[in-house]
Image (cartoon, rainbow, N blue to C red; front, side, top):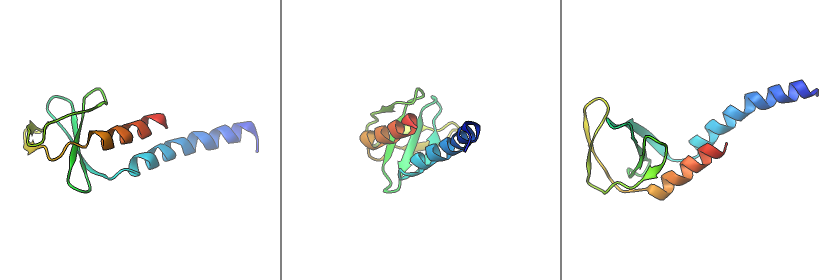
Length: 93
């Protein structure tokens, strides 16, 4: 296989591998908040907060948050470590 073909194959495969790394987590829903941050909900129903800068941050359980479309949601759990691993896996690919 020529070097050009190898580069082409790698350039097509890397985005697919990156998507696989994201799917490897059990995040089932992500909701954009009014302040630009994102709340991720895991399969077990617990949540984690990602700042608008892409860092996992603490959010006290029971805190009410406003979504970008004006709805209100309440924080359940605080899975900072689980989200940190997901972000790290996503960024290293």
